[in-house]
Length: 366
Image (cartoon, rainbow, N blue to C red; front, side, top):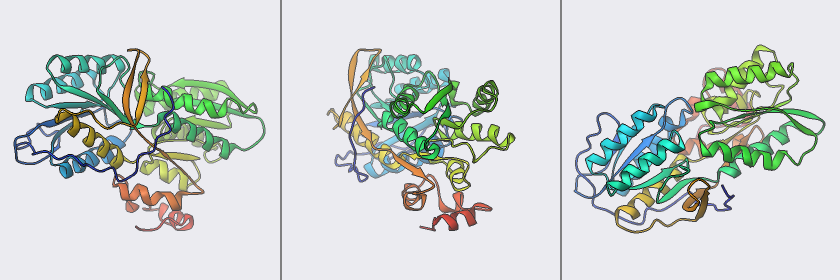
């Protein structure tokens, strides 16, 4: 995937308007929209295990974005099951959605959904994860190479000078985003010859339990001689931190993350995590709503560039947003945007033992 130097303003406007659809009926999957008779969109989220963001941040942001646009949106979660995602997609297509947006669970299964939708005259969008070999009309996400670069920069800042051993705990091997994250991190860290990679492994399904096992094996193989961990998201970071805690080294070994989850932010406050990457769910949801409305109206979405689909040999029109690094040094300044986004609240982060840490770090009630 090529690096895109594109920043979308936080206030992405939904300039297009539609007459909204009828009563929502999604079998408990969650939906939004009005009471007219226009086009609708189906959105399939991937799981609840790889990151808490899908239900805590993305779902409410998507519901709000489509409510504001006056377009009916049916949102369901595949719970990490590719067959379930295919079944949900079939149901949404049969229900008459005009646009289907997915966060794929693998490139192959996502491409099969694209193919089935196209056969039924339904246009597709890739949300957050690009489906390699797919046929989506557009891709809405963040600059994922830049996410990895922020992680690499953050880890280097926490490690400092001197000879250091690094372990990479990468995301799922069937997630194209994980490849981009790792690429970005290597872009930054590989030229720094004082850093040596002593272990690197992908974590299937972004599973926290597997991440613990994998990191423990890498850590043991190196006899604990690990100075930094490039963990691709906060879930994997927590797994590595758990292993380090057992060895009495949590807080001593910098660990990166992503998604600005409650746990990730608390780990930063406690000194156990070096940094996390914040990606506004509100901005991403608004961009998806704008693209879906354009497609439902028979127009092309207004994109900002392209990303390369190496499997299909095509450049996919894309809207790429700019991620933000959150560290111990800037958490007081940056966490306000996280709270404003709505997926994480002050009370979530600054509860119990973390109340005093928030006060010391200058994190205040919005």
